Image 1 (tube, rainbow, N blue to C red):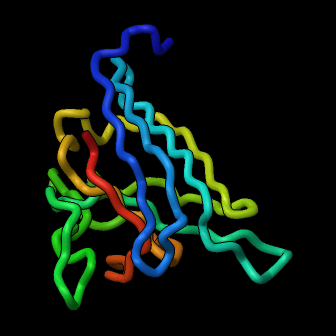
Image 2 (spheres, rainbow, N blue to C red):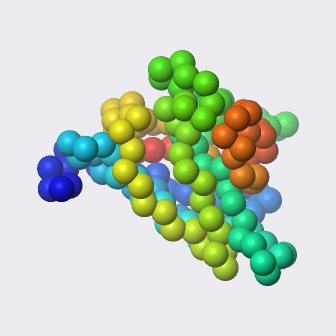
Length: 148
């Protein structure tokens, strides 16, 4: 089914100043059926509640720089990538949430909302709170990197 891979890209995830141990890799493989996105993240903050795991918002943002300023470490991430001008949660960059399991999250999904050409150089963000799939998520981010 996915034998025709056209392009590959990846993002190396780094933690913020507040959570420097967070790290991981997000890979993208473009096929004739869409892009296969795989996220493999370690050292996420863990839930205090033993009856639930933490959900994290996960998005591709329109920013092309992984830099910020003195007051906002992630200022240049900008907002969700939205090539078709759709409402949330139908932005190009809206992705399924990551679910923390003992500090680790793994996800693989097939998406046909974008091509790798659309996202190369953009910023990947893991938000500190789950996405409600209605409102624009908080500007408080923990981890980021650019797709390359």
